[in-house]
Length: 506
Ligand SMILES: [Zn+2]
Image (cartoon, rainbow, N blue to C red; front, side, top):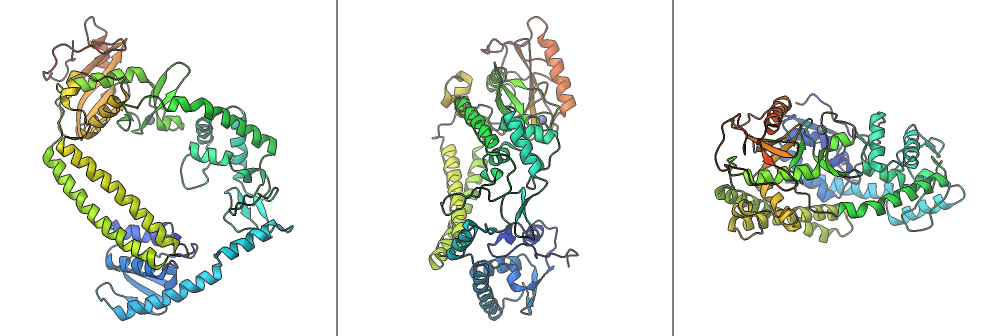
C-alpha cells in the first residue's frame, strides 16, 4: 500500500481539471511510472471526487485506474473496486451514482450559459459584483468580495517600467530572471510569452473584458499602471513588432534543432545584433548560462558546409533501411490504435453533443492521429526514397547554401542521421551516442579533428574545449586547416580516416 495519502480537496472535479493537474493526476502518473506499486489502494471520500466530468468519461477513468492494478475504495457510497474482479453490477451502480453527481454538480456550479450571463450582468451593475477567483494572477478576491492587488503586482509594475525603458520582451524576461523575481505559474524562469501577455492585459489598468463580447468595464479591478503608461508600452511593442517581422522570415535555419550549447546543453537560437547574426544559447538569453559564447551565424554555416562535406571522411553511419521499416510498422500499429480510439470518442461526442470534455478529448485524439499519419508518410517516403531528401551523392557534389529549399533538405538530412552539434570553443559533432569530430575556427580557417571512440565516450566540455584549442593552434600554422572566406574550399586528402590527433585538410 502506498504510504502517501492523496487528497483532492482543492481542485473541483467538474471540468476534469483534477485528472490533469490535481493530486489524482499525480497519483496516476506515479502509478504509471512505477513510483506507486500495483496493488495499492486509492481511497476516495466520495466517488464523485474521482471526477465530476461526464459519467461515461468518469467510468473510463475508473476503469483506467483499475487496469493499472489499483483498487479503488470509496466511502460514499461504500464500495470497493477490485481490479481482479470485473463486477458489472457494481460498475452500473457507479455509473448511476456518477450520473446523479454530475447532474447535481451541473445544477450547483450553474455553469450554464444563463448563469454566466447573470454573473456578467451583476458585474456590470453599479455594485460591480465579483466574477469569481479566476482573474489575473496579481489580483486576489478578498473576503469582502472585492479584488485586491497582491505581491505580484510589483512584478507587473516592473515589467511595464522595463518596457518603457526601451527593453524588448526578451531583455525584460532576462532582467526579471536576473532580479530573481518569481514567475506567476510553476515555471522557474520568465519567458517572452508571459511578459507579452502581461503587457497586453488590460486588467493591468483595471479593465474587465467580458467574454460575451460586450463593452469592457473600466475601473473594475484596482489598476497596477495608469492608462498613459499602458498605451506608451503598447506603442513600444507595436514599433518593435513591425521592425522584427522581416528578420524572422529570412532563410531557413540550417541548424534548426541540430545545435546545442556546449556548456549547458540548451538549444541555441539565432539572434540579430547590429551588424551580424549570432547563435546564442537559449539559457544565456534568459540570463541562466554564462559558459557559452555567441557564435557568428555565417561562421557557423561555413562549419556546417564543412561538416556535410566531411561526412564520408568522418565515417558517419548512413540511414539503415531495416531500422526504417521496423520503425514504420511500429508507427503504423500506433496509427491503427489511435484511429480506434478516435472512432470511440467520436461516438461519444455524438451521444453527448453537450459535453465539452468529450469534444476536447476527440479533438486531442484527432490531432494526435494526424501527427502519426504524417510520421507514417514521412517514413514511407524515406523508405522508398521518393521523398525530397538529400542524397549523399548530392551532399558530396554541392550544397547551395543560398537555396532555401536546399538548406531545409540539408537540415533534414542531418536530422535523419541523428547528428547533433554542441558548440563551446569548438563544434563537437556527435551521431547517436558516438562522438564524430570537433570543428574549430581560427582566423578565417576551419579545422576538423576526427574522433574515434567507443559509444557513449563523448568528450565533456573541458575535453572538447581542449581539443578545439589544439585544432586552433594547428590552424594558425601555415597551411593548416581549410581556407575559410565565406566560402569553404574542399579539403585536401579527404576520404581517409585520420588518426586521433591529426588535423584534417592540413
Ligand atoms: Zn548554455
